[in-house]
Length: 394
Image 1 (cartoon, rainbow, N blue to C red):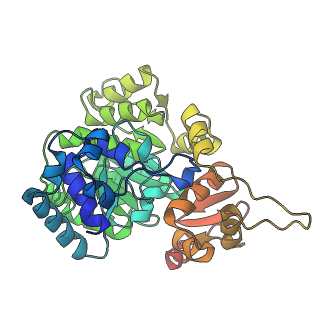
Image 2: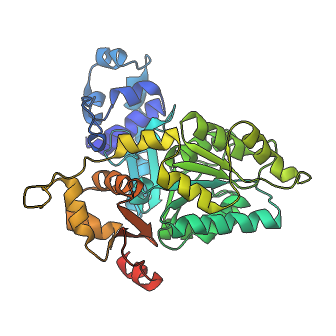
Image 3: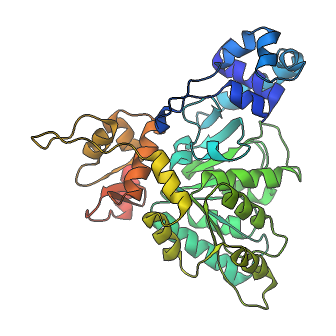
């Protein structure tokens, strides 16, 4: 049995249970962790019941993983994966699993991705808010999201009506946007956003923890919000009422140590009261997107300092002759060249994997050694690319 089938059987039996994440504990080479990896999926599936119980699995989990319902689960996911080369499954054991998402309290065991899976490793800013914003709130969501995208960040949101849709629609161009959904990857909610979901997948990525065939359920939306917060360096709440789901995203982001920003509104605007509550509770007030970008670039928050330390690759040592040694960091720097390069170009030039390249680029950007504009990474001081040039690089 191959790794994908074995993992899907384990996923069917365990879902997001902590025992499975612990049993499949990855080595996380991108972090330089010395922690040894856990079981490989196929090895755990073939292990005796005693090893399952020792890993924390409940009684009967192994039988469930080998049963007929697991057969059907594997068949459904396999059919979806094979129907389009842009369909991807990323398991907890996979080195391409986004490192920032591993840090949340209950990370999903599996991610079903439609589109450019590498975007999950790009630095992201979540833009969330009301499903029924004011016209000014909708315009502000689009304008702020576009400012973040122009600065090189991927904008992440939940594909809902209102603020989410405005943020996605404004950032379909390079580097693309990420939509985290509350359904299976082959479903769309709301149904009216099917075209938008398709465009997000074409330019960026649609990601969900739910397997193909899963319809939207009320309990899926709060759990979706933890993924939005977990993927992002910062969460920006544009407009939200007192009971908005965007407040859940903001709370989860704060609990994970990420930056949270809220836009103030007029006192009489009921759709701004959730933002005011966040500000009273400690979120940063922002009235210009540059304030968010400056906070992330400067690493002013404790969360960003911690993330910088965790993700930074060591600086390349320099020889007496002034030539950088052939570390991954140095290979990336050489691959950039004076005119910069897109992410896919850098993968080819440096000969690295997405899981290795993405944190190096993020660390370089946080350190001020490079900038990213329209999906192109540039050494500091280089001329910004034109939009036409950035399209050629993608």
